[in-house]
Amino acid sequence: MNQIILSIIANAGGVGKSTLATHLAYDLAVRKKHSVALIDLDPQRSLDVFCGLEPAEPAQSITSVLSQDFKGEWPLATAWKIDKVSVCQGHQAIEQTARTLVIHPRGHYSLSDRLKKYPLPHEVVIVDCPATLGLLISNALAAATHIIIPLQLEPKAVQGAADVIQWYINQSLDLGLDPRPDLLGFVPSAYEAGTAMHRQLLEQLPVLAEQLNTKMYPHIRNSKEFVNASGQGLPLQIFRPGHKANDDFHEISNDLSRLING
Amino acid sequence: MGRKTVDLIGRFQGAIAATEEVQQHDKRVAELQAEIEELRGVNKDAEKQLTELRQLLSGQSGEQPIELKLIDPNPDQPRQTITEANIQKKMRSLDEHGQLMPIILIPTGDRYLLWDGELRWRAADRLGWPNLRAVFAPMPEDLHRKVLLGFLHQEGLNPLDRAAAIVKEVGLKTSFETSEILKLARSAVRQLERELQRNPQLPKLTEVVNASQKDQEAFLNRVNLREEQREVIAVLVDYQINPQTFTTRDLRMLDLPEDLQQAIRKGLDGSHALQIKRLSAKSLDTDEEGAFSARQQLIDKALQNGLTRDTLKIEIDALLITDNPPEKQQAGSRQLANLTKRLRQAKPWKWESKRRKKYETLLGRLEALLADTEETEE
Image (cartoon, rainbow over all chains, first blue to last red; front, side):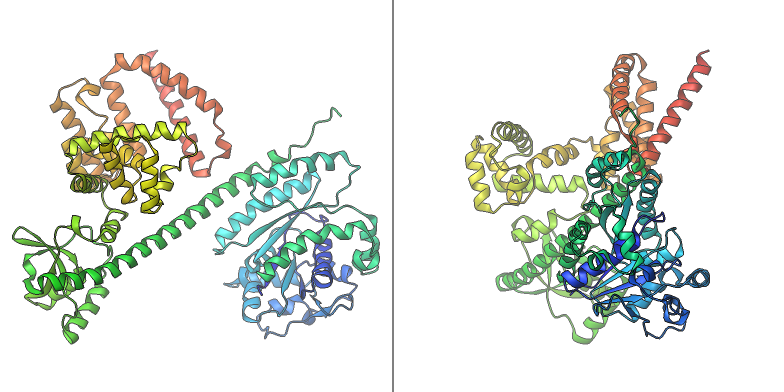
């Protein structure tokens, strides 16, 4: 078994990072029978919403993991009453923690160091990142075996994704990551077939993927039901089991499953 | 419609360039790793062959003590790096246990060339030992094929010696004179290239080189070569030398004027030598002596300052242009037309950043040069 640490990285808000993280976690756990840990590095604590969790105390959140006196007791909650899905909840205080990490000699590698010294037993660890490139995302990159980039088909988000690629390459070099985390691919998100801009951009994706020598996953369609499901703290797969968008995550979890099984 | 579409690829141009650059870098690293593995493999093989050889030789001629001062080190010895720590360790081992294995020497007149045992030789010298026990091998041409392969395929062997060694080997195997070998190899390669072009079903030369001896023979029987040509090519591919590379790269070294050959043996880079070769009596429109001294100046400079290939090229171009203006005028304009065309077709934004930077620098210099000339001409 290979443990996969997948960081979901984007340089824009609202592009579907947490949607991807939680639905992927559900699909991996329920359909592919893998154990999954979700880690929320986002001060907005968006995973709490998607997983229907009450806000955690700082000591019971990711901030305790990144603090200097962490002894390996990961604070983990269970999501959607599914034993195979654990969540290390986020907290606003992580921004303060990040500021203290800046002066720490291994500040960029804190998460990576924790995951190496006190490994999580899960087969997949999914790290949900904040929306701006900074020390916290560097931590997510340094800890990752793989990264995946959600790509919303809007000009601003597209520019953000292009910046992420350059950042990923340069940052991997700067951090001396060897091997560099693999770029699993792009996931076009919130796709609306009725929007001309989305169609135009979608058409260009195969060429882009080829030029970047990476994979372009099938798009995840936009649906109001995603919002409705998160309002209930549930993934779409539980909220609307027969919904077509549920299948949009299959290929990514199939790939991850193959990587886990070697 | 009619609305302008968003150019997705355009927005990713920087990301694409960065990706290409880093992937090229990764590829190079992987290649180098493979190369190291391969070299290790060759060396491991060579070690095993050496042990066999040592036993064989010892049975033939027996072991004799040889004075250390009569031994010359092998300049192409497989072990490239010998550190002080290596020597110290070997000194301790010799001191405690004595010499366990005989060294292998190749008699060369009244002296001996060290084939195997450089570390023991150096350590024994430090310990003040007068001699070492040795077994003797005939000239390296007769050494076991695998050992010779290790020798030929070593990186860092200077290109001139490599070329000479190959030609010598072909000569020994076929009994042709050097000049005949060069002619035969060149004509055979031309013939092979024609055949390969005509018959796409034939394996590529790079594949033939790595094929088994049986497959190599089969290939040589399929292609239409004269018997002498076939003999020469057979030796080359047997040693895993691509005949095409041999004629285009190795033989060019042997064509170098004597002064450049000597310079290579002093450490001049092979590609630098080929550049400097462009300075001939004819191209400089001078006599042999003038060409010789022009070359010598650049050789000295290259050996002393380690000129980059580009600076060297620029210096040579400058010499050729200033010394020979009338002939260059027309050639220059054709060259210019050709260059302009290629520049227009180039896609520098796709290049790796180092190359792109170089390109921009060169453009800048060209502009400066033109501005400067215009001023003078006015």
